[in-house]
Length: 95
Image (cartoon, rainbow, N blue to C red; front, top):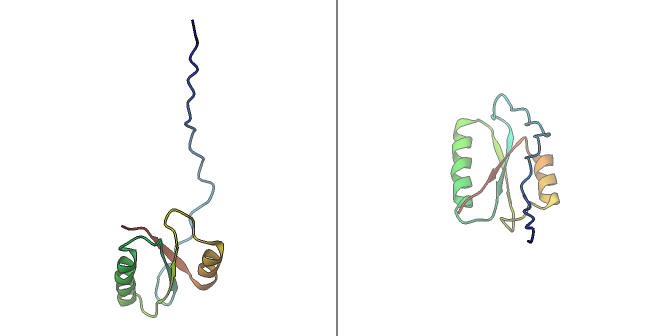
């Protein structure tokens, strides 16, 4: 009689070890990074979001960045630039 070995490839999820960033009290006067993941429709969504945020938060500035490949992380240089220039970042995904 043969034996069948069954392997379970699942693992318990890793605990959240990175806390959420503190939220600003207001977006007025801040710089927001808008990161496009490169999929169709994202640029249009971010254009609309930028208009809405600018209407509701006086003096808000924006920095746009775009990933070249939706399935890969943003390049470290792109992330470093967003961190250096922005107070908050919206990373958008779309189709």
